[in-house]
Image (cartoon, rainbow, N blue to C red):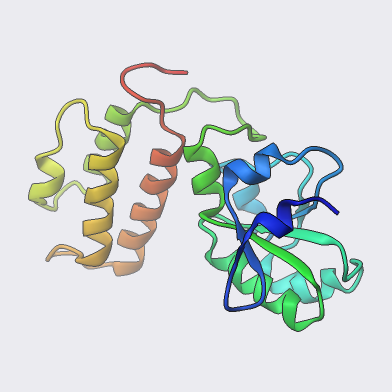
Amino acid sequence: MSPLYDNALPQPGGYRDVDARQLAAEGPPGPHLVDVREPVELDGVLGRLEGIRPAPLATVREAAALWPKDAEVVLICRSGARSARAARLLVELGFSRVMNLRGGMLAWNEESLPVVRLKSEARPTLAQVRDTLRSRLLGLRIARVDALPSAPTRAELAAVLDALRDAPPPGVDDTAAFERTLREVRDLLAVASEGGSRR
């Protein structure tokens, strides 16, 4: 067994949280990497880790029946929430070395760690993320969005997205579509390149 589990942060659910850098530093053979996102998400803008086993959250119990209960397992999702639920489930099922990737693929991408992507499109710039947010919210007059500078920082964009999530503006008719827009823009922000470069 690797020291990854021993160095991970214990959680009340009986599993441990591992951060993106800790997991990236783990050499082969490493833990079993299980991505609990839906199949369509694996080919999305956030990409996926090399060597993952896909097991959508609804199928984890069934898939886990085939895994050794003493194996180190790292669960992965978009933000760390679904994988934390899966981690609690595995602990309930008797798995003893369960970890959750804290912050999920958002955190992995924010650290600019390697991912497998179906498409090799250029990463958006922070200005393009701002423009996407503005265009998706067209028709809503939102002062915080309109006030973003032409070259926003990652922190400025994140603060606006957090504020919109916590207090949706008046005039939002379709809450589900609004929340989906915020998630999609957050994903773009996670993969965005700094400044005007298009790496």
